Length: 311
Image (tube, rainbow, N blue to C red):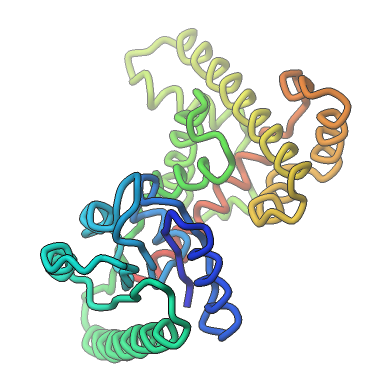
């Protein structure tokens, strides 16, 4: 099982993470100080099974966060609370909270609560497997199709942009538009082996953006402008990962994304530049835009398919 821990007390987060890992209960896949940055689709893409969340936090508290996540996060929620107010506990219950861990943290209570949640999840998954098997049997000789609910590819792309450190860059909208175009365009041809030329991609996306009435001159101008915006965004992502690598070479995001989106020699060179001169990140660096876009598409598709399998 994969856990996400939300608590403004770093010590509590550390204790919970240690217990989860020491007792082999699963993986602590992420943590946050409060719920203000928590989104259901992000938890879904991270494949979070259980959300451990504090009731009282200075930013967005547990009650507000759970209300915000309703309908978008389908995993189990364990409330962490030292509150004895019957009204607040009743409100938590009304939002569907069934499991509590009381502060101060008690190891035995944590193990008991998580074990109950684990058993509940396993039971529900068994029921889903049975229902899925029955559905396939019903449709095996019929004309009906089993259709998996597709995850919004744009949400997946926005999640990736956040992981790559460029969600606010001007080129991020262009990357999302390209992702949607490639996702819609790919059918029988596998882009892993036959990825379309960049110029073709930029032209097609520009045509979609400007509409049929746009002149070839306007389309070419928009395609070139989009390419420049994306190149700046990719360079910003390179700087982001080079800085991250200098700060913490074993950072999970650095290990997961840096070598996948950029050539190792480029990352290494940028890290050396930043070591010598803190302003080096502002200089222009030659980046492989096509590789970045191709990996961005393939990674988004992989995450999208992975999310679909969990539905």
